[in-house]
Image (tube, rainbow, N blue to C red; front, side, top):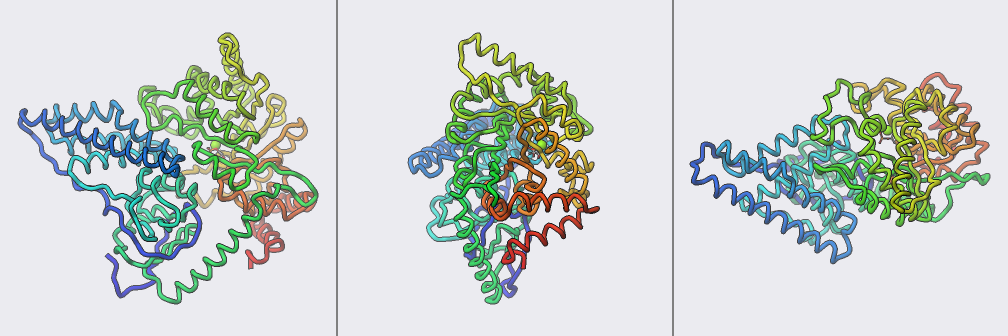
Length: 589
Ligand code: PEP
Ligand code: MG
């Protein structure tokens, strides 16, 4: 509870969608539900508990379908319908339904308790996954189980769509069904106790451009309904009951931010061209088709990285060739005439499919991941490749393979792709036989032999997130060594330069699609190192376009050369900040 005498309580969370808003708090749900537990039920109750559970699942499905239909009718939430569909599918999931009923019968417990037990088991499975993106999909389980539990217990669901005034929503967590109903304008911003950069809530917030801070741990305990809040979605700062002085400061900041946004907006239609005419391909990264419109609205030249893992999540079966085809066709048609680069499945070991029964790994980041997994499971790989190939006739589609570590691996992947082509040919299904094939360069061995690899592909895309992890020996999800995760480490810049030179000597294009590309200061160095393409999240596109348009290639090359001569990341950072200050004094004063 807020101490009403206290003002200016500052909390820091993870800023996932930028923007500054000042408004009143609207609390949604206090947190997790207290679940009644009844054990050793008399057998006469077992069938009524089973029926109660089935009815609650039914009711939950009906509610989701209603939300889905309303969104469809309003034409507003179209982009989020896929997430709701995933939830509906989860309500049909055998593990969830059959296992809950099994527990009611075997353990003789009530429906609420049985669903909690199943939920815990599924949650533990998701929590054990190292990949942050996939781990966060576990929150979908919480959302749907919460809905079923509320229906079992006769509790009401908060209807975000019915909020009439402008508010800042504060919640333990928000289900995608909630965020999908958020109307820009009414919802000034939102704050949650849990969540991370890649949770659905964060993705939807960015695509709706609603400022949001997640991972605040206990904001729902600290805020009362009606409290005044300031939210700064870029820095992740939240101020509870700000004083007049602090409100004034933030109003000024908000004014500056909106002036900055307006200025940036001016870059939307301008080409990503340097002052001496060198054109950079400025692209967007997506995980879901819903993000395409936001990427294009921000003036991107296409999709430089489509992470296809999302298609495999929230389900027990594998996507079929037809499903792959339909989703990729949808994306490529939306992005056309610009190019779309689809990255084939980049997932680790048995982390997403329990029926694969692969051995747990001591070191999953270096284990059976990405292309290694696909080569071990050629049928899964070929199904995806055939879907991509079939979609290739509907626009400008390119394929790239993740985690390539050597030539043989690349050749093996290409052999499977040729088999996929041959099967389509035999079936008389059209595809683009000359589809471009690229390799992600994110493993040091691939970087070192970039000159050899360059002869075997049409393009390179440098995955700096992993390249840093492997070349600096820093686990990218380990907070204890996060301070060593330095994109401007001289070794990193030298490796990138080496890859760029190798690509250019072989006459192929090379881009960066890791987080580095979307950081304006890093982007300036990347331009100087000769990158042809930069791919990033929607919100970074205009900021980076501004940098591209601020400089001649000859000047950028000089900056690149100077940066390569320093001995430490700190020296390079100081140098590049100085260069940015020369070009953008208003932002670096
Ligand atoms: C990377 O490693 O830089 C990359 C873009 O891939 P991901 O972040 O999906 O591993
Ligand atoms: Mg990677």
